[in-house]
Image 1 (cartoon, chains in turn yellow, brown):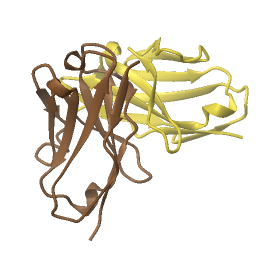
Image 2 (cartoon, helix red, strand yellow):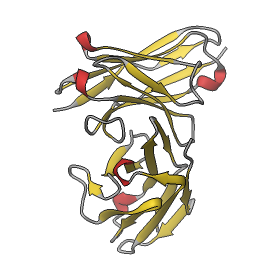
Image 3 (tube, one colour):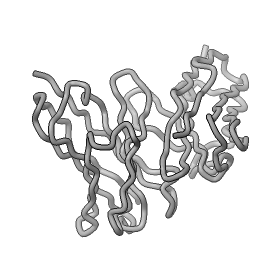
Image 4 (cartoon, helix red, strand yellow):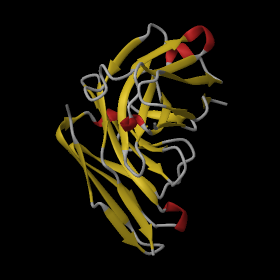
Length: 108
Length: 120
């Protein structure tokens, strides 16, 4: 069973700054099956990135994903106040999936 | 427009059974995977299991195998998550989600969630 570890636990940044979120897998993950989700309080998760680097429909281009093997990154190039949320990575492999524990992004 | 609509909030006692639902519309229900996710109060997302409604092929996370049953009825475009004997620790929000494509890898469309409260 693949375990995903996200860091940092919390990121506190100002509007306009760049946010870099990390997701590390306990073993190699197919890039095709690595996704990132955003969840705001009281809402269902929203798919941001799939296939490690493809933006989902309607997602602004300030969100980008990269990585391969065991190390993946979600970058928010210029933070907006509405980006305040918890971000989860998720992988699927060997017919099983898992989420990371989440990174909370706070906007100062 | 793709939509997943989940059944309403439930309040149950320990030991009771429960079946919650997730009804899809705006697409061919049988040909996309459905994922069930648990989110306990104040906690993160947990991948419970997936089902392919076309043939009911189902995979469970080891943490949930034997604890819940996932099923689907493609004739009415509905997936289910059920418990035979609820515990207080089953108190959580449960989400269903539809895969982005034909593989059960990543999930683009989400239901609104069903809050399950188990309390004596």
